[in-house]
Length: 75
Figure 1 (cartoon, rainbow, N blue to C red):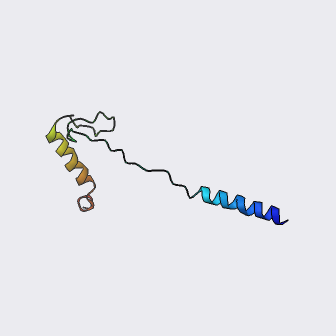
Figure 2 (figure 1 turned 60 degrees about the vertical axis):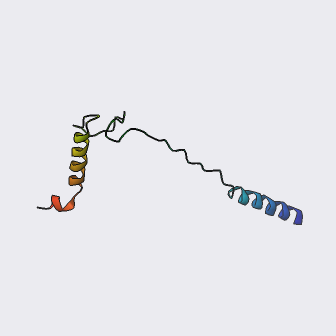
Figure 3 (figure 1 turned 180 degrees about the vertical axis):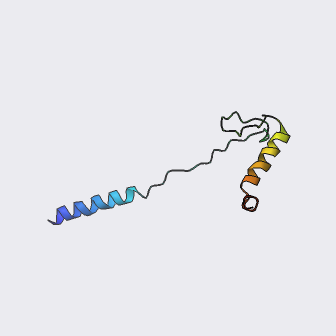
């Protein structure tokens, strides 16, 4: 009886300590030498933005910020 209890306690301890292991976490950052407004190569861009046009990029940012302005929405 004691042997079964001891095996059960040992199994519980092993299973309990298994969750305590931690895998190494390393940061792998991509460094981009291009400006944000130059080129993204992504399909997730706002309509009307011309790739590589800085003025168009700033206009899109202003429009987005204005769309999030709660004071401008209330009339």
